[in-house]
Image (cartoon, rainbow, N blue to C red; front, side, top):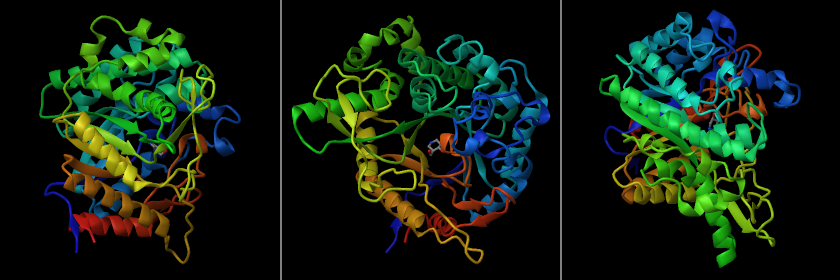
Length: 454
Ligand code: IFM
């Protein structure tokens, strides 16, 4: 008995530039905020940096050959702004040429490229101008989008503007765990708004440049659970849900920021002040698909004092907290709960009428070992099997889901966790750069070949 996916379902794997490329000073690349952040002692586990990561900048042909060997037809990767424009403005042709070669190599191997323009690696030169709390960055991002589209738009059809603006804004500028490592809740909200504005302006540019492209943005969602069904718990969950999930989604749908959310954040006084006339119309550009990243749910509880600052790392929340995850956890301590994935997809289907969904990331970190040349990552195989079944259930119940990208093709630089967390379906030995297909890669290749779950 096979659970089949719809004909034409897009199967892929995903990566991001800073997490795999290495070669951070090659061919005129400028520093990004992640280079600066990782250069500071104690910001990233083991003081790891993005060099050499998976050395993909030099080994991309080998990695594309792996994709071809696995028979996975789509590949989602990101372009590093600081490679293409080292100072955020001036084009570096050698950086652009890398992505040109990568796209050609993918196409030669029958793999369809899906480009993400921003996966967190802002040119440091633009951070020096204030970073994302500076609204001028929206226009600069649109110029960068136009440059990349001009270079690759004849061969790339799927374009994502920004990956997970939540993390770029709230973790980068709010709790400071990610680059640029700032802790300013008010500025984090403004960064979030400006990232949405950047998305809208880039989407306009991508469409204006002509071509048949499909335009999307990728959001990370955390469905919220409560242990107790009473008004206080429901309100705690609502606060978390509105800031984590709907801050970024509702303006894209033309609904602006939910009034309850604006009220939750009013005490900081920055978000509403940052919204200029016309911004919400720019943000609400029509989308062809919505990219959905899902890893784990969150669990919310009320605090006794409704005015107390939240302990959860979201900017501006008061009167609520999150409780520890439970049950089976990944090595990052994330709760495994595939039914929350189904619930999320069905909720999105209802909340975003007519907007097709693509799972742009889903996967799990576990401790893997190579034994006799094999990585028997049964936990990850089970995670994928259960979460793919959850996607299948959502499709059966009516959700319009067009594809699934496994995170990630390669073990890589997991941001503040350095190289301690392995998400790949391909094991990477960071000393030798040897790649070994894990059992999860073989499992995934089989799912792709059958277009279904055995
Ligand atoms: O590795 C990250 C990725 O860059 C963005 N989404 C979540 C992944 C796992 O943490």
